[in-house]
Image: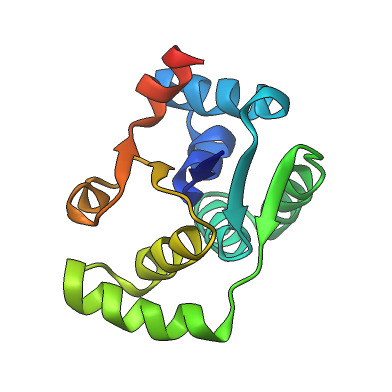
Length: 136
């Protein structure tokens, strides 16, 4: 399995360039990927789309992602929030990225698809969106 950071979904919805194409290609191949993310991703997606467009488009984008049957959503648990604080201290991550790291580690995931380079030093393998899309 692979863990998809929120920016995969944000770029899939908003980017009209090669990065957006790569993100959309990843989402089109979910059946063979066995990919997961956490419910926090929907908050990040809604916020990014709302800031770039409008409420109706943000709702539509979230519903489109929620309708993807081959994407596994994991809840954020109480213990993940404790681990968030450790991840913030250990790796210098912001709160949301520290939560993503906590959730993926709890799930046993070691690989994250993300454009966020600050994951590079956070005890996980980060794969850039375009590189990952080219490999599948």
